[in-house]
Length: 280
Ligand SMILES: C[S@@+](CC[C@H](N)C(=O)[O-])C[C@H]1O[C@@H](n2cnc3c(N)ncnc32)[C@H](O)[C@@H]1O
Image 1 (cartoon, protein in one colour):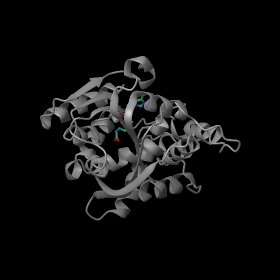
Image 2 (cartoon, helix red, strand yellow):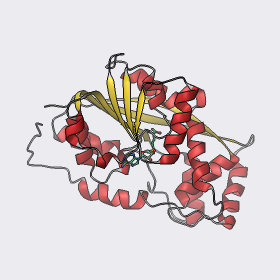
Image 3 (cartoon, rainbow, N blue to C red):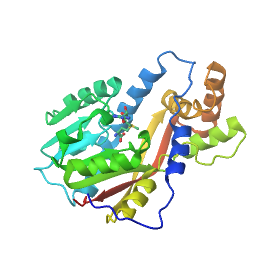
């Protein structure tokens, strides 16, 4: 693999480490024993909105490069946000996912859509042997996954190793305003990106330093949640800083009552799709 040897390197390593220390904390939530199970179900239901809008719009952008003979490796499938629309356009997807709850929901979503071209590998991405996948895939892709990984440059190198044609990364650009406002009210401090998902710019910097020509396109998407789902969504962020017990849950609910007239919470956001050809 060809990587440029640059005299002036952007020091992204410390920023990445600090960002992950803050964002990767497991939320402390004690108001509901079934919180994590219900959150995984919410996730699965939310992505189906507007017929898998998030994944569908991603694949519409990638139509520029994919065809129906493509064999794809997807890292961190979740319940199938991207997997389901992509599986309708390519020959086969191998999906790596370690969370059993998400796999259960993915299997049920694949069944619901009559899709049988997705092989699910219940493993951590880090446990996949590089030799097993070397230059085997037409596309290696991950959606909303980047910041889950400690060594982001190793992730990118390993994605390139596995691909014989394209690699791609999808990340939402920014977070829902309601979540930020509630964080500010509860913490009495300004929101300064404590739980932003837009880690894609790290990938962009690294790849450009390597000399890759990265394509970037953006799309708009919407998620809708009812009150209970929105409380869980907010608790999953606030819980990284403050334990969400029954008292805090009530406060979150009260804030939410003020901001929605119909009990539906709409998140309008954008996501970035990056894709590039690895150099061998
Ligand atoms: C934020 S979710 C995104 C899911 C989906 N790709 C999407 O776009 O909505 C990240 C997913 O990656 C999975 N994941 C996190 N770290 C992983 C790892 N090291 N190996 C495999 N899967 C992982 C999580 O279980 C979760 O399902």
